[in-house]
Length: 343
Image: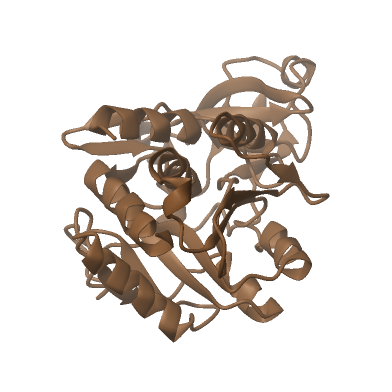
């Protein structure tokens, strides 16, 4: 498992466009990879993928979600601008509004991406000359001159809009969009490539869920339909190891995978959490431990449905942006921990 292979696997999955409820391309890519690795993934009516890896004994599920954050088309103006709405908060929020501006945007139509443009907002010269003295929010500029041109591309009200950036190396770190949660789908794929089926000490299953970002709907459906003895919800973890802020999280990029004991939604299974910590010790992996507020994973749905669950995360800076950052060594360490856990 070379660093180049890890980076390529992460990049391939993260660059796919797949807003909540529009995960079709991601699902196709994951199904192809799992099939290539000898699995027989099945799609349920909600859109989740589920596959048995092998082994016997305790029934263990590793689950990650396929969707990414984004926006929806609220209005197409007569002069060709695309105004946005969101189910994730308000566009006028000063903290959130600064992240998209200047990044490429992709708009999804009926059969996939139909238009590419730019998240934009009035620049400083214009803002200073407006009576309001300030402008909040942003929009998508497609470089067109009329609403009719925009609609002719297949853009419609309610169409998803997501970041459209390539994954690239910045220094020793990987940077891009949709690390939440494609990075953890990459972890599953890398584990499947690495783990010997005959060495499994559990009956291992893997799942890729839909619509986590807007309420964990896919995971809720899966949790109602299936029961497991242990569920590991894989997601990206928070870290505040940057200047100008101190959230008191105590987690950092490059510090190894994070075992999450509690978040906004649920306290995770105590015994499972410590089994993951112990697995990290056996694998020689540094393990961080944390509790996060303003954070949740698919894991709570399995707890509510009666399956013990825990959350395991690879630390990521700048979550829910077009420039999420991860350390390849953290990704590799997460794979190594999981291999020790299931063998």
